[in-house]
Amino acid sequence: MTIKQALDVAAAELSQSDSPRLDAELLLAQSLSVERSYLFAYPERILSHALRRRFDELIRRRSKSEPIAYLLGEKSFWDLTLKVSSLVLIPRPETELLVETALALGSSSESLRVSDLGTGSGAIALSIAKARPRWHITGSDISLDALTMAKKNLELLGLNNVALRKGSWCDALPSGKMDIIIANPPYIAPGDPHLSRGDVRFEPVLAMRAESNGLKDLQTIAAQARRKLALGGWLLLEHGYEQQATLISYLLDCGYRDVEGKKDLAGVPRMVKARWDCPASDSNPVNLS
Image 1 (cartoon, rainbow, N blue to C red):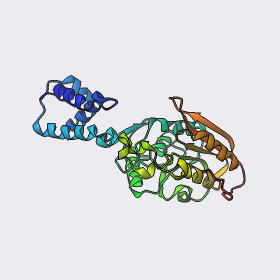
Image 2: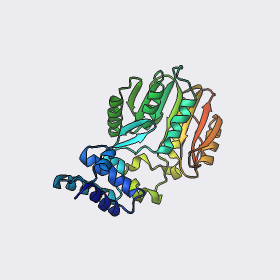
Image 3: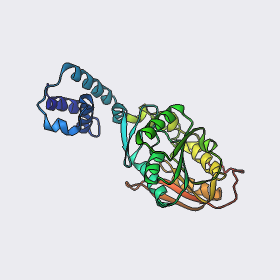
Image 4: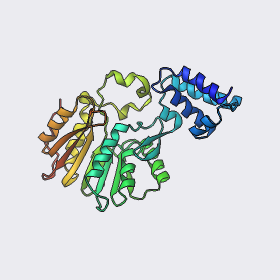
């Protein structure tokens, strides 16, 4: 079977995918250890039986909705290519809004302290660290597996302005105040049908699901961040479907100022930024329920 024939068959098998032909091309290129352009340059190359078996297995797994990023072992985010596995959440394009917003809050000449809570693969922390080499970035996660993946990506990128720490939300941060705290925490409510559909079924549920209708971790971070942010510091939070108004109200009740919701490129409310300029306190937390 030739490369072209194998791609035709595979694309037909992946007809339920949003991008069957692209998926087939990416997986065959990986099986051959070549760039996608090679497939177009040599469509009549005959595939060996060993290569066919390797490719067929990847197509079988993809046909069952296993994420293409896990099958390839990598995912593009911002201007990086990051290693990923089923132990970490796959970085989403819409999360780049957090990076964009953080970079706009400070120039490359400044030396800011920034933390990325629940760093996972390190997507947010490493993207900011590369763009702002004078900034001091802390990436934290409760998952040792996630930190191992983030460390691998950090080493591959060769960045020297990122520290990784294990722990829960702001409890993992070093002493001193932060200029910017960023988080893309779990925000999907338990029982949400999206957790059992498609590609999402393969991702770590602890990185997606949160109690209190998906608001629990957002609430915890907002409360804790008050004692870790410098005066005038910023909190950036990604949130889920129809959560923006509730989150804005909560942040205002917590004492944050200049609270603003932002939409992603698809026009979907995606994140909130808020400034802290009150004396440090995380007492009297507001009930989100």
